[in-house]
Image 1 (cartoon, rainbow, N blue to C red):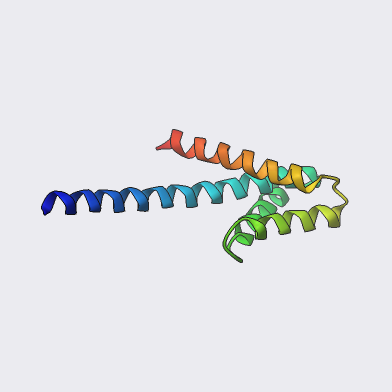
Image 2 (tube, helix red, strand yellow; image 1 turned 30 degrees about the horizontal axis):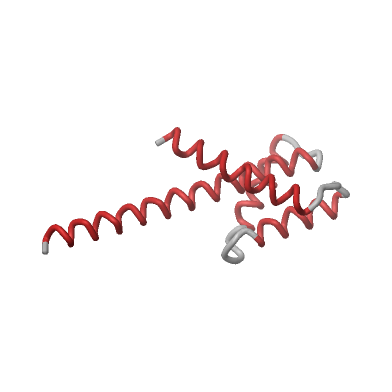
Length: 107
């Protein structure tokens, strides 16, 4: 029975590790998205960093990416930044891939 228990424990540990990596990747994606969006809105330096942080914080409103999307979409609309929903979602997807690659290369 010990072999099965060890294997089960291994799967649990891998799942927990994968979840932690995904959490970190999503948080990094949100920061990268915030910096990208800040640039589109003409923000730089400390203003861009503060905006990126606000995008990371926005992700804690609800599960999934819709809260982050709504934040950036609303801010773009308020600042008159012309970008389709499709392109915003594509940028979010692309930056998540980038964030995952960055985290893997650090580990």
